Structures are given as C-alpha cells and as structure tokens.
View 1 (tube, rainbow, N blue to C red):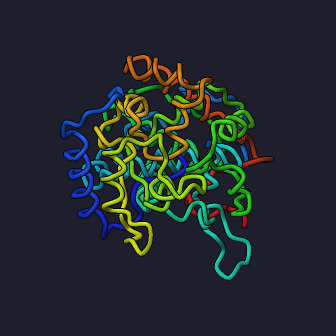
View 2: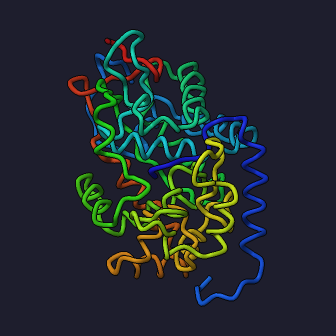
Length: 354
C-alpha cells in the first residue's frame, strides 16, 4: 500500500526484463531452510448500497468495465496503479475521491495528489478514472460520483488480474477537501512496524486481520529501490542487510539497486513469484523470506499477524473472500453523503465550487 507500480513509462521495458530475471534467479535451486445524482440540489442522502444507481444509471458498472478492460489490455500497470489510488484515497479524508483533485495553479496549498508521499502514484490510475468519468457523464450526467467510480474500477482491476469479483456498495459523494499536509500521517510506510501499521489501521476502523488481508494487494505491483534499499545494505543502522531476507532475493535486488548512484527508475515486484497475477503467493513469499518491503516481511515476523499470514498462504479462496470483505470495509471509511459534506463532481480533478 505504501508504494506502487513503477512511475515512468520509460521504465516499462527494463522493469519487465528485471522482473523476468528476478523470477528466474529465485527459482534456481538453492539450499535453504525457508518454506518456500439526480442533481446536486435535489439528491437525498442515502446509505451505501449495491443498487444505489439502479434507476439513475443502471448501466454504470458496464460503462466502467468497458474502460477498465481496455486499459488493462493496453496498460496492465493501470491495475495496481488504480488499486493503490483507492487505498490512498480512503486513508486520507475517507473514500471521497479527494486524491483526484488537482492543486490550484499558483496556490501554496497543494492537493493530496501532489504530496511527497504520493509522488509515485502512476498516471495510469488517474487516467482510468478520468476516462470512466467522461463516459459515465455522457450517459448519466450529474449522477455518479468520482468516489464510486474509483471504488468500482479498483474492484474491476482486482478481478481482471485474477482476483475475486465482489459487489461494490455505492452512494459515496465526492469530498471538497484535499490537502497534501493531511497525507504523511495517514499513509503506511515501506518500513513501518506492525505496531505502527496496526495503530494506523485501527484509526480507520480496520482490525488486525484487515491489515494482513489488505496488505495482500501487494500480490501485484512494483516498488522503487528507495523503498527497500536500507534492507539491502544498512538495516536499522547495522551496516548489514536485513537478516529476514532470503539470500537469493538479496543478491538479485543488490544487482539492480546499488547502495549509491543507482537508476531511480528501477523497480522490483512486490510478489517475486507471480508478479502479474492476483493470488495468494504474496503470503507464501513472506513465509519464505521473499517479502520485498520491511513492512511486508514484518507481517510474518510479528506473532500477532504470523498466524493470519500462514492461514492465507494455504488457502487462496479464503484470501479472496477475506479480501473482498476487507475492501468493502475499507470502502466505507469516511464516506461523504449529502450537500453538507460533499458534491458530485463533473470532472474528478476539480471541485464544483473552489
């Protein structure tokens, strides 16, 4: 959650080559003990529901689906990029599409998307929502919020990548507040401890199991070297690598991520065994010391989360069911309803009244 798919289109080919190399390298036998609107003025406040747009925009999911399926074919990175966008939106100001708002030109107050912690958010995620919004507006003007489009698109990509298809509750309104200063304290870090992660998740109404399950979104996507470089060379100031990383992974990552002067565009997959498939291999990797981020590997090291990791590693369907439930739960964080707190934007990047 804390880091994403690679951030520049020029790195796509090198990413593919490095990913293939890393998979081959890690699959080489090695002795180890590790286990492998009706309108803005008339619309009434309602609770979230699956059939929220049943009368006002019955074709909504098909419209969004036509965009996500095409985007996934042309730019597969749109999947993890949009899923990450949904996470970052919900954790800051709630699931209200505030992450999509652009900063005002010349303003000293930056919007969420321009926060330092969001600098690596892929443009493909934003493009997916923008394209879907244009199509939806052409068929159902002034009805569907950007927040709901983001939630549906994230689900679509989970499914397109091989994950579960689940019903998305709708009825969110778009938020009117987006400040970069709100981001740092609300986004997980690549080196966060389980205690820090749990405190953050609890503050959002999410439990220990939700933390472990939602971290499973790292079954797809990539991270830049600077998010895990300290694990390779100077873990916690020891001048030594993290002992909780498989030597094969350590060697492979060091070859592409030198301690100093490396290519900042280089990335590595979160899931080194099936990086393009949404499955439960992420948890199997943690058991085998193949977690990419310190915050990922920590889930297997902490006695509170280790049993959940072990359970999900054994049962893909259990993970899928738990992930669908956790996404539904996360999708209800800080939901805005009604004109007092929200609006239905015409364009996702700008508020109606700003």
